[in-house]
Length: 231
Ligand code: FPP
Image (cartoon, rainbow, N blue to C red; front, side):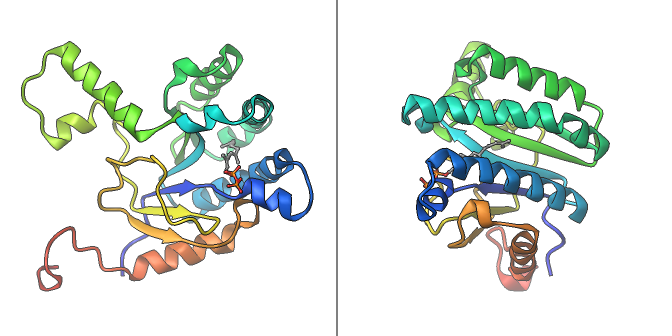
C-alpha cells in the first residue's frame, strides 16, 4: 500500500454543466464549485495531505465571455477575503502558480495579502493555479534560464525555474466531469503522478469522493520505471 499522497492536484471540471443541468446560469455552477473548494480544502487538510493544487483558471480560460471571466475573478477574491481567517485557523498556507501579471490589480492585491497572511501556516499548502498553463510556465522558465546564461540543465535545475519550485510533484491527479485529458495542467510535474478520472461534476465532489480517490491511489503499484520485483 502507498502512504497517503503528499500532494494532490485537481482539475475541477464541470461547473458549467452542473448549472446547465439545473437550468441555471453557468456562474451558479462556479458559485457551487467554490463550496466544493472549501470542503475539499478542509478535507485534504484534515486527512493530512501536505499540498493541494487546484486548477481554477487556465491561460485558455481568458477566451471565455468577459462576464464569466470577471465573475470568476470576483468569486476568487470573495473566497480569499471571506475565508482568510479560516485558512489561518487551520494552518493552511495559500499560494498561487501561473502568470500573475495578467491578473487584474485587485486580484493581484488580494493574492499578495492572502499569501502574506498565511505565510507561517504549516499544516497544508493550498496552491491555486490561476492564469496558469503548463506550456507558458515552461516558456517562462526557459526565458529565466536564458537570462541567467545557464549552459547545463538537469531535470532538478529545470524544476527550480518553474512556478512550483519547492513543491514536490503531485502524487495523485484527479479530474472530475468525465473528460479524459490533462488540459495543459502541470505537464512537467505530473510525469509520474497517478491519474484518477471520475464522471462526477466538480460541484458534487465531496470529502467521501476524495477519500475514495485516495484509497484507490493507495492500492496502485508505483514503479517509477523499475520492475515490480525491484520494489
Ligand atoms: C471548470 O468548469 C471550472 C472552472 C473553469 C473554474 C473553476 C473555478 C472555481 C471553482 C473557482 C475557483 C476558486 C477558488 C477559490 C480556487 P467549466 O466551467 O469548464 O465546466 P463545463 O466544462 O461543464 O462548462
